[in-house]
Image (cartoon, rainbow, N blue to C red):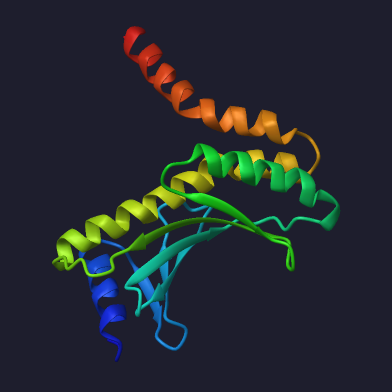
Length: 171
């Protein structure tokens, strides 16, 4: 697989957890096939010395410099609302990323347990990207204020639960 034992461990754990992936040992990165076709893939960046991996989903739309203030306001509001993921903007490229880190440090886990932990982080970043995708595009396009977008994202889980309850009650 790879000469780096941490890369081998993480790769094996993700495969054990049922994820398809491509490994770039030179970059210490793993490309994980997303279950969300709009995402395509999740990038895992490994830091072996810290025994850490951070998962990223890149937002497909780049941000024009004129929109940095509005998008930054959404990024700040979103990240303060999220428990398991964060948003970031790269001002040098205009790219927005959704990220979720896992820091193992000295923690030793078997491949199955590690796979479950890593997949939980992958799924968190996928869910965050899915929740913010359309809202981020609306803010980038100037069609939605950042505070309104953040409020809609915050309310989304409640709206989803209400839709499930309504579906059950209508049976």
